[in-house]
Image 1 (cartoon, rainbow, N blue to C red):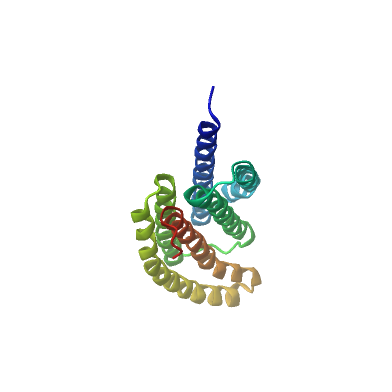
Image 2: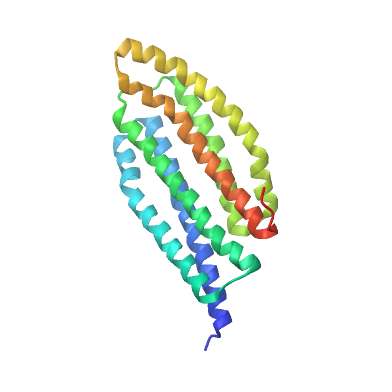
Length: 218
């Protein structure tokens, strides 16, 4: 028969696994949303929107697990940080999924196709952001402070790509809005902002990993 301590360790591992699984789902939502934008794929965009309920449910499940662990076990030190931050990471992942839905909604609502220059800008920025998200979740899964610190160093590069992408879209949106007389085209201007916010949440996750393992806030 398992001891209370063994059961507690098992519950902590399950929480970690659930957050990691949610990370994979949120990353997949982002990848699908960007692919839908690049390929003007309305069906794939709708798939992202329909899948958001599953990720919302995952957040609720993780919140319940965290509350029960704190209430029943009264953890301290590293364990308390791991539980508290597990919910914080899940909340960032839920926001990443929401921003992916925003991208998907843009696919459905804006009928003006992107030209080659803008497609390349989206592809390059999304690749940059996805790299940050992937490394952040690897850092969380492996409790790897070095990986988490590397993510923080990548932020400056992401900010530069965001700035370039934003101005690239500004010119396109201004021209298309005037030519097509389509006010909805201005939604495209938010694409770079959605991707930047996904990157910001990914950096938050990396910083949370550092906090779990070192107790230092960065």
